[in-house]
Length: 485
Image (cartoon, rainbow, N blue to C red; front, side):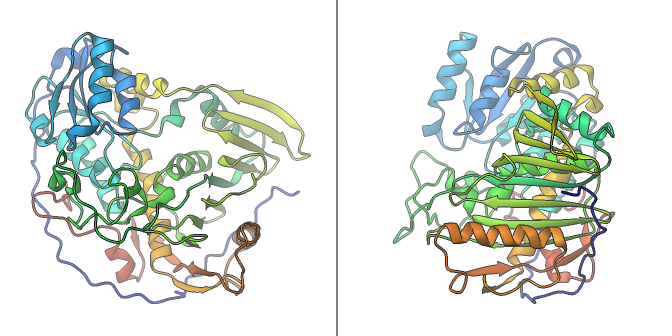
C-alpha cells in the first residue's frame, strides 16, 4: 500500500444547476462595545458562575462538567421547554446542595451580572446567535458543536469573540483528550512523514424517524417561538420535536453536523488546515427507508486542499468497519498512517502496516477544565478548541451539505464523472455498502452534488451566486444573526 498522495485536480465545472429564491436578509445592528465582565473576581480565579442553556440532551454533559467541578457553580438553567429540565435541576441540587434558578428566555441571562459563563447546548440553529449575544454581554462562552448552522454565522462568532475580548470554546472535546492530543502530536512530528490525506468516518446507525400523517401539536410546556428563534417557525412534521430536528435542514445539519463534526474536526486538525479548502464535492442520499427526515444518511464529501485532501464518509445504515474504525479517523502520511478508532485512541502503523505506537485516554471533563483555566487566565490562546477551530471545522460540514443540496439525482449504477482516485475509491466502497443493504444500484438514486470552487480567504464560492446564498440564511425578525460584527 502506498501512502504517497498524488496532487488532486479539482474539477471546476458545475455539474448541475439549481434555482433558489433569494429571500431578503434583515440583519440587526450589534453593539460596538462589549459590556463589562459579569464577575471580575470569577474571571481572575474565584468561583465561576455558569448558566447552562439547553438541558434535554448534550446539556447534561455541560451540567456534569461545571456543577461542583473546576471551582464552578451552575447558578442558572435555561430551556424553552420546562418539561425537560427536571433531571438537570435535581442533579445540580444534589451536587451543589441548592437548586439553580430557571429561566425560559435566554435573553434574560444577558443582563444578569451574576453570570460569568454561558454554556450553550441547544439545537444547532441557535448556537451562533446565542454565542454572539452572550459575548456582547461580556460573558465567556462554551458553545456546542457545530458552532454554527451555516458558514457565515460561524465567522461572526469568531469576530465577536475577538472584538469583545472574550474566551469562547467550541464543544469539540476530543481536542482535550490526552490520547487524541498525543495522536495528533505524533502525526505532526514527521515520524510517519508528511500527512497528505485524512479521512473522517461517521459509520453510525441511524434508523428511520418514521412518517407522520399530520403536523404534531406543540407541547404546552414549550415556548415554540423561542425554540425556533432564528429559524423559520414552521409546523412540526416529525414524531419527536426534540432530537429529530438533527435531520431537518431548518434546524440541523445531518450527521455531518452531529457526530460527524467531531471526526471532521480531527481530520482537519491532523491536516493542519487553518483555512477553508479550495473546493468541495459531496454526494449521497437518504437511503434504505422513507421517513420525515431530510438530511442524507449516506454521504461522501471530498475537500480540495491543493496537494492535500480530506475525505469524509457518513453511513447510517448497517455497515462494516473500515481499517478498524467506524466512528473515527485515519491520517495518511508518506511513511505510515494512524488509525483513530475512537475519540481518545490512536494506533500508529508504519508503511509496512506494522504497529509502532498506541495512545489512549479521554473524558469530557478535560475540555471543560481547559476552558475554565483559559477563562481565569483571560487567555483565549490557552483553549484547546478555540472558536476559530470550531468555525473552520463546522464550516466544512456546511460546505459538504451545500454541494449535496445543489445536486441532482442519478442512478447509483451510473458513473460519477470528474472525481480523483481517492474520491472514486470511496464511492466504490459506498456502492458496495449499499449493495450489502440490499439496495439495487440500477434502481437506487443518489444525489450527485455540485462541484464548488472556493476562495478560502473570503470564505465564499467563486462564480456561483446560488451557492453563495447558502452560506447564510434569512432570519426571523428579532433573531437576526448580524451580517457584520
